[in-house]
Image (spheres, rainbow, N blue to C red):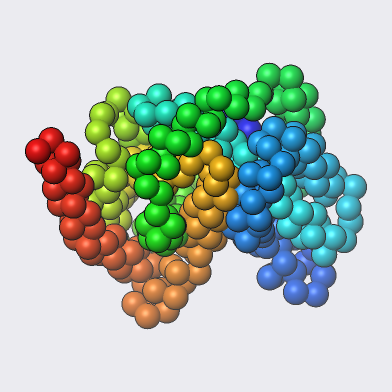
Length: 381
C-alpha cells in the first residue's frame, strides 16, 4: 500500500510550487513548456514504460524490481535538490517516471499474487483509498514545504530509502504451489487477450474521467470568481473524500465489479455534467461529489476486472498494460479538455462534454451487463 502511494507523490507534490518554478526559470528558453513538464512527464514515462516493467516483473520476479525501483525513485526524485539546469531536472523527472512504472506494476501484481476473490477486491480498493488520501495529504504538504523554497518538496522523495529495506525484508514471492494452483484455476476460466485489450482501452477513457476533477477544479472555481486557495483546497478535499467513500463502498460489495461499470460511468458523467452547468460554488461542489463517488468505484472496478483475466505467469505483463492505459488517460486528460475547450469555447462546456461522453460509454456497456447476467444464468442451468 505504501509503495502504491509513491507514484501519487510524483503527480501532485509539486503542483503548488509550479509558479515558483516558473519564476525561477523565467529566463530559460522554452521555460513555459518545460516547467509544466516537471509535473506531467513522470506520468507519461510511467504510461510508456509500464508494459516493459510488466514483462520484466514476470521474468525477474516481483520483489527485486520493486526494491531496486524504490531506491532509484529516491535518487531521481531528490535529484532536483542539487540540479540547476531545467533540462536536467526534466530528465530526472522522466527517469523518476520509469521507476514509478516498476513500483506501480510490481505493487499491483503482488496484490494479485497474494489474494484472490473478494479479499483481492478489498485490497485493490484499499490501494485506491491509500492513493487518494495520500494525494490530498501530499498536495497540502507540498504547498506548505514549498512556501519558502521551491526545492524543499523534493526532499520527500527520500522516503523511498526508508521503504526499500522494508520491502526487501517483509515482501515475499508467493509459494510455488500456490502460484501453480492459482494459475491453473484462472487458466481453466479462460484468459482472453482481446478482452484485456478492451479493458485497457476503456481504462484510458476511465483515466481521463478520473483525473478531470482534480486537474480542472481550480480553473473552474476561478471561472466562478473564486480565487481563494483555501476554498479551492476545501472543494478538492471534498472530491477526494467522495472518492475514498466510493472505494470503501466498493470493498463492501459482492458480485462481479464489471457488472457495475454502466452505472459507474453514468454516475461519473452525471457529476461532470452538473459541474459543467454549475453557476455557483454550491452546485459545483455537488457535481464534484457525485463525480468523486463514481471515480471511487471506477478505479478498483477497472483494475479488478483486468486482474480477473490474468494468471500468475502473465500477471505482470497484464498489470503493466493496464497501468499504462490508466496513467495514459491521466496524461491525456488536460490535453483532451484543451481540445474540447477549443471546440466549445468554454471550460465548463468541455467538462460537460466529457460527462456526456461518459454517459454514452455507460450506455455502450449495457450489453456487458446483459452478457454477464446471461452467463450466470447459463451456469445455474
